[in-house]
Image (cartoon, rainbow, N blue to C red; front, side, top):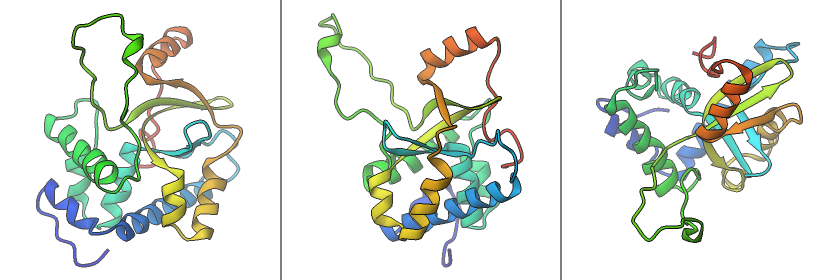
Length: 212
């Protein structure tokens, strides 16, 4: 992308001046996923950092991979430093993540669907106020044969991306991310905790390897 200057995390909004920019960024993500497939050719256990959910009809893009791609797309390594989510993530980095995912991609452009818009209060047996915890990603675990990876998944709406992307790019994205061998074995912290308890250990994050 040209004509972009980055000084603080708030400047990231000017990288997405229109929905066309969002589409161009996603096309860059697709190219990066394709590159990873070429680098891992022949690895039957390979799990890409983007997987499609047929149930949710979303492309689950790992947040840190999203940040890595954003930093490369805008050709500025400081972006990765400001937005990357590590084990001991700062409060500022978390705010940056909310701004990018929720503020820009969800609330403004409606291409991401990460937060609940409606809550069924009938299942809560109380008249007292209760807190709905905000978030900018979903914790999911994906398994492919012997390989198991944890995602901080940012769910991009498939229907929105289909309208934004070139037909061939969208078809390539589907072919890489929507595969029967990618099994979602946990969604959310409770299921993840149960998976860890039964499997006997924490699950490696998808971006803890050569994607960085």
